Image (cartoon, rainbow over the protein chains, first blue to last red):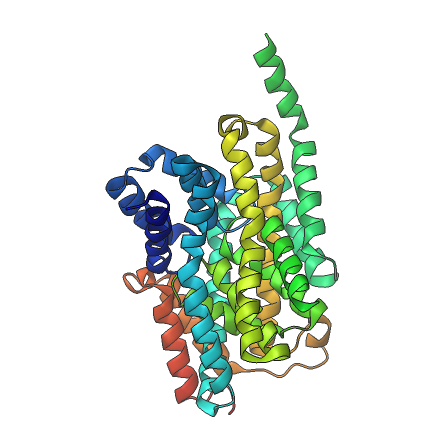
Length: 186
Length: 201
């Protein structure tokens, strides 16, 4: 099979089999990409995953771009990425067009009132699980509290907080960076 | 032009949301308030659909929001095109950033400035997600869309809170049950909603 087509189809398969994004995708990537296709080693996959988590955008998309690029350059990266999102686009477009036809029905409205409650809990759970990784000391707790309160009470774009927090992170760690730099210099 | 704006809005979301699916929610929340393309209550429904269908959460959200926006202004064809354009907008910055990083991978991985930036970015991203979660909680339980109105107009929904307590216990504490996929809890909540007429409809 043409390698470009293979990249697209394999990542489409990964896209279909991933429910709930990010972390759910890892075991499926291990099976398809590492064990079956040998496009990356286990370690490489972990590296891509770690970088995918700390670069902008959707983790699944970032990982697909990495592996596709490694296999067949920039075009490979783009095709693998389009593969991951292709099934999502089709499935969601079908569901969204159905829901917009049924949303006036009483039982659909009642169902979504129940579902919204569940979504609240899912968001709370996501916050709790990210908590341990993000809040490692007093400064990170303060950044969290400041951004939380500011975005509850002020009406500013989230972009402002992201840019400011990134800059603040570098500023706070500047001493460490300099110290480590000196050590390496010697 | 609507499609250009859709692309631009999702391009910004893709560029600045860091740390996976839920990180797009605060951006979409702000987009809802600013553009009026969809309401915060609709956003909660979209999260539910995105969680219960295959594929990355952020991508599902973009497709859904793009569809809803296009549909409300230009009908079904507008919806389909809107879904595709919003999704491409979301993944475009990712692809460009990753293709660049991939060529300097080793340096990026060990760069102390990158590490330090993420030391600040992770708690900020978490703060944004928590705030978006709070506003969805306000809409869901108290039917108010900002915190200032909560104190003046407190209509309480105890049946919703009972359901919330059950789902919270199920997802966090009950052994075996808590390992179930979120779609199970979403379907359970939908059933409870229909049986007890939680929407009041």
